[in-house]
Amino acid sequence: MSEISERLMRLQPSATRAMSERAGHLRSKGRDIISLSTGEPDFISPDAAMDAARTALDEGRTFYTPTAGIPELRQAISDYYADQFDLQYESAEIMVGAGAKPLLFEAFAALLNPGDEVVLTAPAWVSYVEQIRFFDGTPVIVETDPQTLDFDLGQIRAAITEKTRAIVLNSPNNPSGRVYADEDIAALCQLAIEHDLTLINDEVYERILFDGVRYRNPVTICPEARDYVLNINAVSKTYAMTGWRIGFAAGPQQLIKRMTMLQGHVTSGASSVAQWAALGAMRDGQAAVEKMAAEYQARKDLITSLMAPMPHIRYIPPQGAFYIFADIRGTIGKRIGDMTITDDMSFCDALLEHADLALVPGTAFLQPGFVRLSFATSRDIIRTAMARLDDFLSKLQG
Ligand SMILES: Cc1ncc(COP(=O)(O)O)c(C=O)c1O
View 1 (cartoon, rainbow, N blue to C red):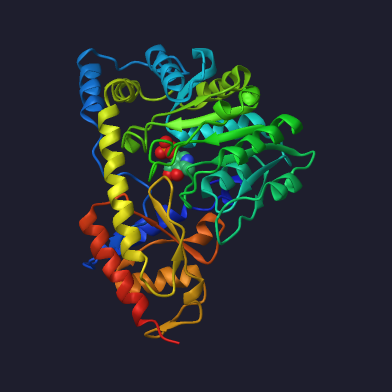
View 2: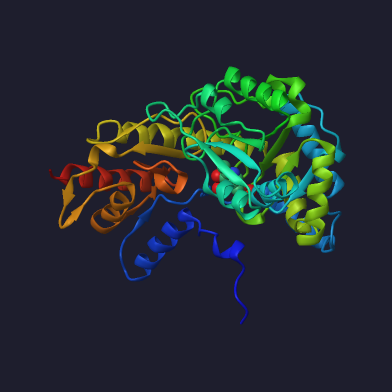
């Protein structure tokens, strides 16, 4: 066999997937592992999606679709941006892809030449970094305040050079759960305009919000930035449709056109039946979205109330998404059995070994000293998992 390319040899596996697989492996050996490591809703997709998919099959919608997506779905996305964010995007400014992930890949492909830089704030979802590197771009990571996990605009400004092509914004944030303030988003928009950059706005968690916190699209906040913002969204998290693989992008027409051209050579477009299912969900699945959002709120309240009294760890209550990003630096140097916690990775190893609980180390999100817990799981599982975590923390010595 010929050698694998340097580009692919550089690629790191997804740490969240690696942890889920490790948990699965231990489970197959009979261990009663609870995994709070996956970033995936535990709900089955809404009936509206299922019914639309069945109808699409009955109607024989089994052919290639237009590369940018079926016109009906692009129109529904346009209507959604008008209703939800008061924004007017025409069909030519919208494309559908096989999830948010490939659309981000296409966006980096469209924007980056070798050596170009993309500014990201830590903690950051790890696929951005791998995708940027894949195109020989350089991810420039701006640290956030570990107390608040909020970014500092001065530091973002300082990170911009003549090679910067884009800034990535992810609010609600995976893994921190932060929903950034309107004035910070407005300032990012101004930076994009000033330096002629694209603000890649990954808003896949925009409908999962807590305690009355509101999410506003950057273009709603700063209309003059419209030509500089590329919105990346998906039905994956909002409608519990991860496995259907449908995402969408709304942004400058030329960028969408180039991304679509690339898509034409890679997937030829997203799955036809899945697009019809997504359309069903967007048209008739809003009540299901509200119901799931209410359940996430109850889970967030439960997990934060159970974690609050625990020793050695600290967290900032999430405002959106379904994660808690906990600071475990207070456990460093402590021991359990013959294991010593030296960092977030050894914390996760010891927790898996001694408490049968799988979490993702913050290092996977470029933020060592933290761990990510997903609460996209039932309240019963959350209670059991938190009892295990509490027991583990109280047994730490030293
Ligand atoms: C911040 C963020 N963006 C994008 C994605 C990818 O979404 P999709 O499943 O639609 O590709 C995820 C999924 O984990 C995510 O957390």
